[in-house]
Amino acid sequence: MLRKIGQCLILALLIVLIADQVQGKILAKCDAVKELDKAKVPRSMISNWICLMQSESKMNTSLITGPKTASSYSYGIFQINSLKYCSRGHSGGLCNKRCEDFANDDIQDDIQCAVKIMNVDGLKAWSGWMKDCKNKPLPSYADCKLQSLVNKLEEPRESV
Ligand SMILES: [Ca+2]
Image (cartoon, rainbow, N blue to C red; front, side, top):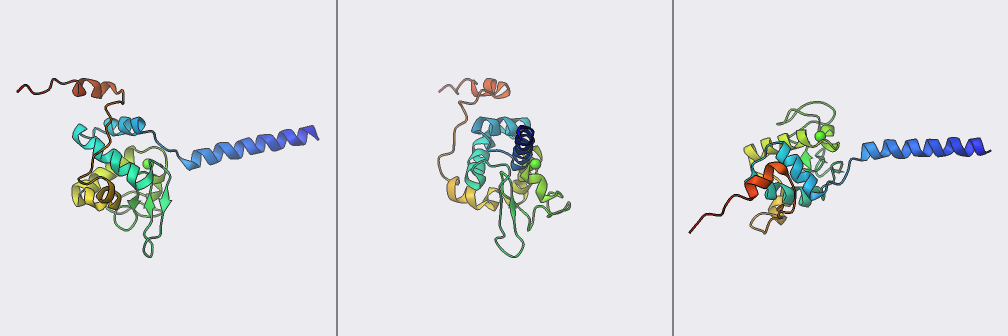
């Protein structure tokens, strides 16, 4: 009997571990800033991207929503859409990627695709950005301790 309970517990633990890997995660703001910095996103754009991610997915790397129209699904922290920017199940779209690759918790490829989308269609491609970020106060990331950003943030202010 005890052995059986033990086996059940191990099985339950395995299921939890596997589910956790599939689920992705909610990124903290400073972790998202760190990822953007790592992807060499210009400092001047970071607040916009953070606002956009918060609005589109609440920073959930594995959020999949849809279908909005026939087969239009949106994937991951940037809610990258399958209609134009990626293909479901195989590489395709503007970013030439599988949409599923935008629902895991490595967001470096997501950032590359989002930057590509911005270069082609602008930030207005995201309804969340239009609604919550355009001409609105943007989140500050001054509280995030990032070595590569610290020096830049401490640049002397322009003298009058
Ligand atoms: Ca990814």
